[in-house]
Image (tube, rainbow, N blue to C red; front, side, top):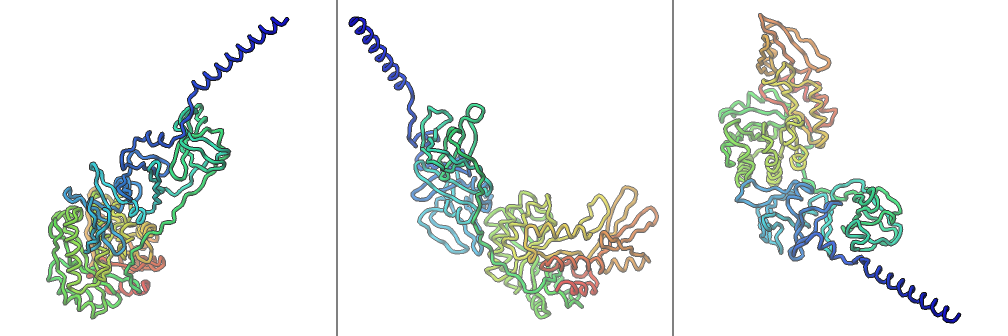
Length: 565
């Protein structure tokens, strides 16, 4: 009996040893998760001075860089995602970046410890702008100061978290202390442990049935994978902006604007001042077309006349000088896309306006190409700073907002220019496929509504026409001829024609046939202009601008005065 008991104990002991060895082998064979942040850092293979870049909840392929205490963001990311106002010259030899702030034109050069602020050189401890391996980077702190973005830098691993999309984000709250893995695998390394009830961003689901693991990121940009069983609840939270953009201090008149454009084709045109202003007591701004681009290098041709300005001031008019370019003779793109040319053009415009004692500048650059749009906006920004330094009003003429004119970017213009003039005419023009009104009331109202969505109404001036078109239809052919208000009335009277009021268009209409030709005219007269001015007054716009002096009958100014007060 004793011998049998001894054998049983030996068997039990052997089994216990086998079981212990098996457990030991299982324990030694199982991978223990690594609790080391270096796992994440190694995964992104960060080089020396390289910083991981996190855009919202996305880790960018590009990275930021760090020099000393300054973190630099890739300019391409800045312009695409954060702030498109950083401007680079098209000239390959000029690697400068220009940034316009209210009252300041700042220009930076790569790797230089200084920048130009207006005309003054300002020295800095570190460059604002660097180029490394052919990639341009800009100081993160400057970007954060001038952009609607939050930039936060963290260490171990080096990373920058950029918040710039203000919207609802999905958050997960963890139920208990939760390990965060490098990959959606329970045996992968652990980067950190989340405390109970920690909130994290949800990025995506991973694992079997897309549900075993979820990818998450903490508020400070650490990310990884947690098992879904650790999620207590989910909730949407809105991430909003507290950024207040600096605003240009606009020069605005206390009274409503009643502007008349005055066309001058040569210096001798200045002698017609008395003719154009005769019997006009209601106008308060006269805008002569005095300055044009002369070549592709920022030089100008000018008919500006000091004596004319003095006479206008004596008659109670402000003088804004219109600047345009002769179609086909010069390249607006060349003038605006190169710093040297644009700087020269702005200086010439300001110098000439100040020389004759005028009060403002009116930019009339029509038919610009899409490619020129970004350079035009930079021109308006820089010109606004120079105008305001000289005490000059800046107004910009615009076609009706729409897809074909989106590159004029009225929203950006309005941040810097004082007045936006919407030219609510040429609804139908010489090349139109069908006859129609130059400025029906519906077209005018759409123009105002579209402009008011991107500019304050008290800085919108409604452009109205003092002219119309006589349309001639013969078979499938269509031609037209422009008539000013005065000549239109003479034509109607001499041909004994009768106007018929069109209630929908708020215009008088004429149609008659002579031979094989059908004649049509939508009249711009005191009745149609009264409706336009009434709309401008009801919409609390800054005033009206009329193209052009000399076309109108004096009575139309009485109508303007009646509504624009």
